[in-house]
Each structure stands twice: as structure tokens, then as C-alpha cells.
Amino acid sequence: MQAILHCDRNWGIGKRNDLMFRLPKDMKFFREQTSGKVVLMGSNTLLSFPGEKPLKNRTNIVLWPGGDRSRAERDGFIMVESLEEMFEVLKNYNSDDIYVIGGAMMYHTMLPYCRYVYLTKVNADGGAEVFFDNLDKMDNWKLVRESEPEDDNGYEIRFTLYENLSQKKSQY
Image (cartoon, rainbow, N blue to C red):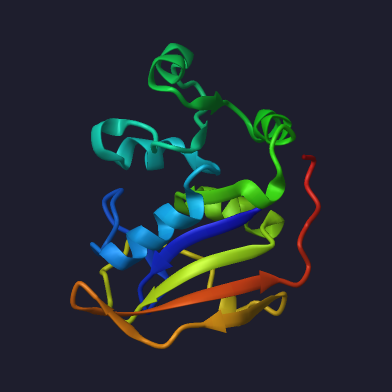
């Protein structure tokens, strides 16, 4: 399992249940990495998508306690109501094909189970209200790859890859 996201220079990842930046290159990278794969998210992340619809060309698993199962069937996503149920569903998929895509609580909860984090760093302050764990300050995370800086819609970004040196084994 891995996580994929972008953050600002303060490790901020969002405000008002939305992204802080519009980054076409980062979005292209996200699509390329996750297309045909499994994306795992909390309900607020799903609700932040256009039309509150799941992402196309992916298996969408949404942790949504008390959510509407008929909506999940109609809109084409897998709804789980607990971490236990989520781990049970994840057993059906190759862990290398699972991407955690938000929100902050889902990232924080699943980070110990992730082998890698694909993190696009934006050299700007996005005025974030929610933050990602600062991997540079965590002994068990190692930066294994970092691109040269490049421009994405007026922002300097770097594509990075972090590896978890003490990945927690999950129930799936």
C-alpha cells in the first residue's frame, strides 16, 4: 500500500475540504499512478470530488461510517463503515495496487501500513487547515527519490518518494 498526495512547504494538504493548488503536472502524475488501481479514502474526500462522484477507471473504497449503501451501489464505489471492514475488503486486492488518497485522518491512520508515499512538494504556503505527518522528522521514513524542481501552473514543485523502513503489517 502507498499514499499519494501533494503538500505545501509546511506539510499542509488542504483547506475547506479542497486542494490548495491547481497543479496539472501533479494531477497527471496522480492519474498515471492510480489509473486501474484501488484508491482508498474517507467520505469527505469523495464529497470533495466533482459531483461528489468516485474517480473513474479505479476501484474506489470509501470509509464512511453510517453512509448510504444504496448511493455507493448507484455511484459505483465500495463503502465500508469501519477500519475492520475496510481491512477485510482490502484482502481482495494486491497491496501494491492500493493508494491512500485522503483525507488527513485517513492518511494519518494508514501511514504506518504504507510502504511508500508519493509526495509532490509545493514550494509555497497554501494556507492549509489540515496537515500531513512531516516524514522528514520521522526516523522510520526515508527520502529515496526527489526530482529536480519544475514549474507547475506557476508553482515550483518536486516529485518525491519516501519509503517506510518499519512498515506495519496489516490484517489484509
